[in-house]
Image 1: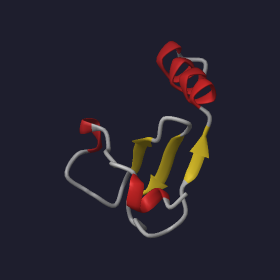
Image 2: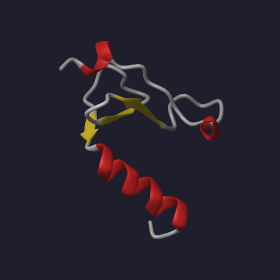
Image 3: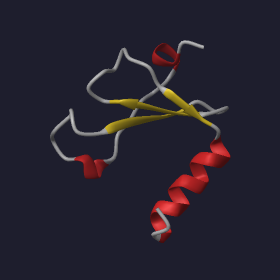
Length: 64
């Protein structure tokens, strides 16, 4: 799968105006893509949706 061509990438509104200081996320249906905003043509991590949900839950609840 060519993640860069198939994905619609976005970043958090909390990331501010500096485009080089954040990651971008893409919902790929079968995975969540995560990439460095400084290297849009670079590699992306593909995380299973259930693992991504637990990661976000951990951040929101303060476990992570």
